[in-house]
Length: 356
Image 1 (cartoon, rainbow, N blue to C red):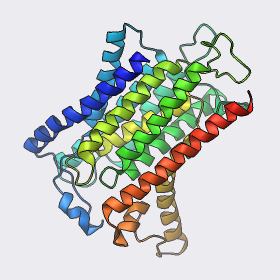
Image 2 (cartoon, helix red, strand yellow; image 1 turned 180 degrees about the vertical axis):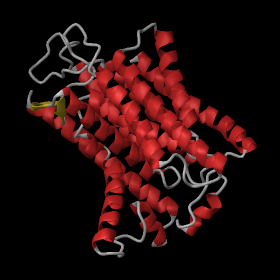
Image 3 (tube, helix red, strand yellow; image 1 turned 60 degrees about the horizontal axis):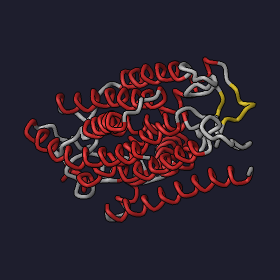
């Protein structure tokens, strides 16, 4: 547990202290957020707020993971390195998007095709590498089966479909966080809860692992490196928590696509490696609501030839246009996120309990 605690503390301190320095540097360089003119007018006051704070989150997570292992003299695992690769890789795509917006002074960064291509390259590389590096039992970081609370045995996929499935999961999760990141502290607060949940899931799977538990029962977990994945998960939760100090209303900095795409990718990586891919739909219920509000808005607009289901999407903007205070929306959405996380953890534990 020492490595887990150290990683969480270092990541929290990294963003808590590092973000203050980043704000100064970004303000000096004039790297401020551009605000859409068609959005809520209350957002116009945020124009010029430093963005790309996701760089601090990425640096804090990677360095805290490395430092925690260095202090405890433990060896990094293939699973953790792959999640960090996905996390940082999507962060690079998000950084390019943010940097182009700032340097070109336009609301559009990377062209949609270029952005999708960048995400796809990172995701495909992650998917293929995740099916390598078997341990002594032949267990690889990812599996070829679709999972809910563990692998669903009869849903085995050929490698091509595995890559497609992983690509879809990563795209859904990264865009889910990206869409949720529209109000001060909303996405970072929700991510604290979800990564906190994955810390508990990984610790539980380690305690009940078929590989590490001498008296493994019939409901043990066939997962790879659950302890080290807990180290990554708690570092992610700690980094988001420290960043929230500066990102809460009124935000002194935004994470930008650099942060939202990378955090979404890390969520997908955690779900894939813990064999809880479909459970992420519940744990990340708030992200699903945000994404579905956009899908419903676009679909309704096309079907009705111009009518809108919501005043604006994602749905948090709908409530802004209903004159809800921003802090009220964030707090209530955090409550929804917390309920989804609690429900997901309850289902996870109940499934294990029912088989003991």
